[in-house]
Length: 205
Length: 205
View (tube, chains in turn yellow, brown):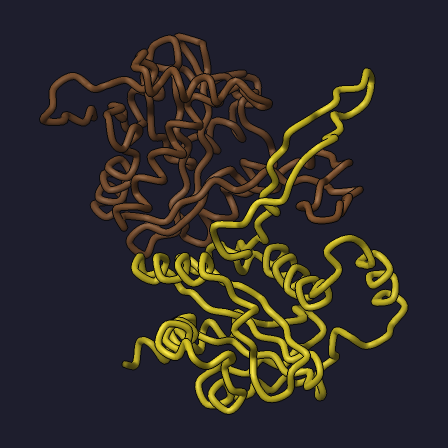
């Protein structure tokens, strides 16, 4: 299902307003890859937080800190650290008493979402959260098509585990099984509406 | 209420077995302060995870990465980074469909728990999570007394917000309102039993 908003066509978050250009300038840093969709998610989380609608945060990157300097009169400086593989997904939090847990991923592909975007530890983590009755999903962004989907993790896991010979999830499958999210001004990625719809569907079953 | 376990007196996690000494050797690193109680919590989370009882993780320290080197044939090395103030509590996850969110703190004090152990951003975060019906609490460790308590965040917040002139939470108040947790072998800090008891009490109200 497609969400419709009263203010007409959605303001895609990759348009070129002055504010956006400033944000883009900010994001031309380390770990730039995939930053724009992630930035839109982070801003949506901030919107939900500010409006008391949900408490969802992106987890910090896990780093192994090896050496720290403590210069006088200054803040401690980490001089040597290494990236560690995360053991969870990137986002989690609480919404109306539900534990929500998700990963946000993007692709330039037009016809399918490559599985290489997901890692075994993320799949395993989602499986464990589902067993605890968490609300687990992925937010998929087709950057070329400018289309965003909410996909229940159970379907992703099912494909990931049982169709190992395939290397991606076809857009046709996503269109049929996921909930399309129309980006808007605020929140940019209104994914909680998809969560509501998902929960309603689950209750009906 | 005190939990009683069939194996008699609890194996406190600060005893001096060989394994523990090895762990202590490990923990004599950066950020050592408060590491032993934190380590016990982390091991408890690992136990709960391994046994499919809950999915709770400690969030990584948020760092602002400024400079990264990419040496050939080696992993990327972070050469300059700074500590950032966290915007949440340290631990969150999912247990039987409930969103759980907590902070673990310790004190050497014997008669009260100093408020300086908590920060405004943690209190604010807990308030927001409670509004979303999350299960929020603090695990308090009196290291000198070797006593551990599960305290509902609502009581902490109440004291924090309304009794600003006081600088600590008296042990007598904690004894009366919190759930005492007896450390054991595995999990070392069986806090989910306190969560169960807390949820039962809430249902009765």
